[in-house]
Image (cartoon, rainbow, N blue to C red; front, side, top):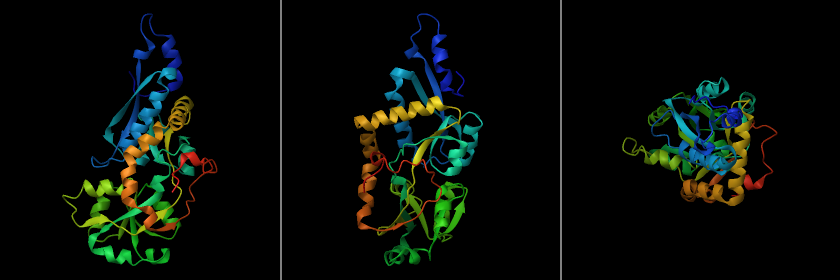
Length: 292
């Protein structure tokens, strides 16, 4: 079956099925972009949560199967492919005004705001330098690394941080080692796995222990602008999962250990402004966010 999925056609497809074929046996395909590094495990929880939302609504809408694209791609390329209906159906990404103009967001933070708590990957030799930082002005004397199409780059720069960018995710670790920047701000859910998966080749980097940044930074599922039925289905499934506790259990299973290791309440937290958010950001829906 064509992988370019349009959920709006689903009802019509079911009505046209030959007699004797059970609608529940029909499985449509959703294409999700393959991460642009084999060591990038951030997508796993997002896919599990998407699958949970689809399972919660399968009785009403039918079954869906999630498949990765055949090739790796950057965030910016995935956005273009979704917008142009070119073989990718959806992606989970941090939001911005520009992204919400291009694509249709499902405004439920899939990480409950966790990605906005940033801890640092640093060179081990710089551990004492960072432990002596007392305020944000002192941190701004150091440079941060970030992806060229990551929203973090714009947020950090807006708050006066000197940012070195790379179009290559793996390249950022290579740039940190010789000091092309001083620290790599990563989400609480990212940093520890990134260190662990690279320890064979990067024995001289570690997670910094005393500092953190925080800015509101929701990650949403995004679909094509006209795919309102798919967006509605995902939102309905997520809200069912929030109500019955399965969202929280899945979140804790994949992120609870990272939260414990990060010990955010023992760090100096520098709170930054995120100028990229829209007025529709559901800040007031407290049940959607971590309560730290």
